Length: 445
Ligand SMILES: Cc1cc2nc3c(=O)[nH]c(=O)nc-3n(C[C@H](O)[C@H](O)[C@H](O)COP(=O)(O)OP(=O)(O)OC[C@H]3O[C@@H](n4cnc5c(N)ncnc54)[C@H](O)[C@@H]3O)c2cc1C
Image (cartoon, rainbow, N blue to C red):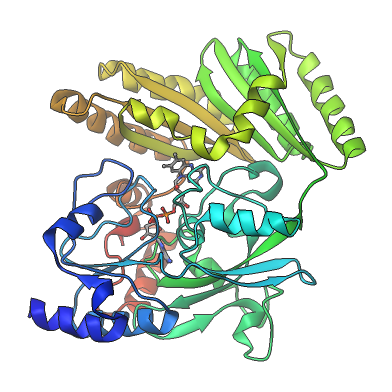
């Protein structure tokens, strides 16, 4: 049977783009996180939506699970597969259209963000949101998580930037959303022709289909990008500053790479025409002046970081990342959550960790990174017990996971099970994926 499946997959994608070889499958057992390894039976690398649709139909025929994977740079195990097909999208890496009239760019799902952004920059355009993991990350995955990143306050999250999607459904049909559903139309308006079907795929991590094309909004490259850093000694004051800056929409992005109870370091990034930047920076300084616990640190350090941001953000992962727990919380829960999560981490005897925040317009992403020495099995086990407790607590506090993958599945079921929302998601899954082959297990579906 294995030989037969490899042969049939090869008929679709070409022999050089399918394998069941152990040494190649080994490279697909994990993503950038440290979920337990899962071994796929096959890896395929299709080159078009039609090839993806044919692979999906074959998976239905043999009832084999199929899991989309972009760069494998997420950390929650969403692109892992136990015994199924991992379908890598990286050959779908073209920019299909730059529509300067509508202000949109249409790309294939597997292009990396760095490639997309470099091409747009040459023409004086940019996208709203890009993840720090832009070297490996793909828009297909970023929309599916849905991802956040540089641009969080002004542009919110990648889902908000979507104008249209093209996707292969779990049964192999190909659909387009927004105005693009009309074969005569270009993608220029998302909320068209009926309900917003793009929303079905945003945040679904492949549970409802595989994205093949994405149309995102694009924006003229700003005349000025200005950054400055602040350091505070009172967490409550710092959160209040984030809230005010966010509510007044003064920045493109706030990054808080360090939060400790008495040491909070944050950078603000303001983009626009010089007078607009000057005006916004003055308003930020006026807000900060109300809080003597926070001091101005200057533009040098964040500007140096900004120049090399795609290379430097992975630095802390070199310490040996053992796990990450990322969730969204409203502003008024951030201080409490920082202390509660810190207590959990310390109670489990974990020595090396970092807490961070990435504010959004209505709350913030709260990040906990836990480090260990690889090979220290006891530390690893402690960390994973702590992570379980933290996911449970985040949902109990009214938070929402940033990306769910396989990591959050039991906790989503525990906290949402029986709600109308959860039951509707399951009903949609049954209806759209009757053989339950499309990335089973993500989100707990
Ligand atoms: C150093 C570093 C920094 C990072 N910073 C950020 C950040 O600032 N913001 C952020 O959001 N993320 C960040 N990430 C996480 C990650 O890089 C991004 O979210 C990225 O967009 C994931 O893309 P990927 O192609 O690697 O996803 P993968 O890991 O390949 O997949 C992630 C999920 O998407 C699903 N998926 C993949 N392709 C498709 C598709 N075509 N259709 C449907 N589902 C699909 C997979 O099944 C899986 O569930 C960071 C990662 C690293 C290593």
